[in-house]
Image (cartoon, rainbow, N blue to C red):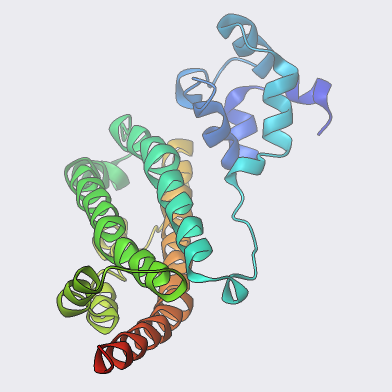
Length: 251
C-alpha cells in the first residue's frame, strides 16, 4: 500500500490488515479503537503528527523487531546486556501496550464477556509478578554472573568472592528458572489458547495477537537463558572456583 493510500485509509482498516500497526499507533499516542472511523491523515492532523513519520514507522517498525544475533558466540557480559535490553522492551513497551488493550477491552460479544472479566482480573497480577521476577533476576543472577566474569578476568577480593561462591550456585539458579518457564499458562487458559470466533471483534484479534507474540518472545528469552547463558555461566563458575581454590592452597 502506497503512502497516499495509507493516508486515506481508516484506522480500523489499517490495523485489521496488520495488527502491529496498533502497537505503532499506541506509541504515537493514538489508541486505534478510539479513532477507528477516521483516516490516518485525519488522526495525524488532529494530533499534530507528521504523517510521513507515522507511515515510516508503520512500514518499518525497526524498534519492534528482535535482532537475530549469534548469541552463542558472545561472552556472558554481552548476553546479559542483550537480555536486560529485552527486559526493558518488555516492561517499557510491550506490557504497557497489552495492559492498555486489556484495560480498554469492552466485549460487546457474548463469546468474550468471561474472557474480558478474567483478563482484567488476572493480567495486572501477571504483570506485577513478571516485573518482580525479572528485576529479581537482574539483582541476583545477573549480578552474580557479572561478579564471576570480573573475578575471571581481573583482580578480586578473596573474602568477597568466597562469600559469593558460598551463597550462590548457577545450577540452583537454573533449576529455579525452569519453574518460571511457562508464565503465561493462566493467560492461555483464560483465552482458550487464544481461540477466536468467526466474528471476533478487531480489539479481540489485536489483543490475542499481542498476547501470542509476547508469549513467543518469552519462549525465545527463556531458551537463550537455558541453552546459552546458563551453560556458559556454569563453565565460568567452574573456572573461577578452580582458580580460587588453587590459589588458596598456596596462601
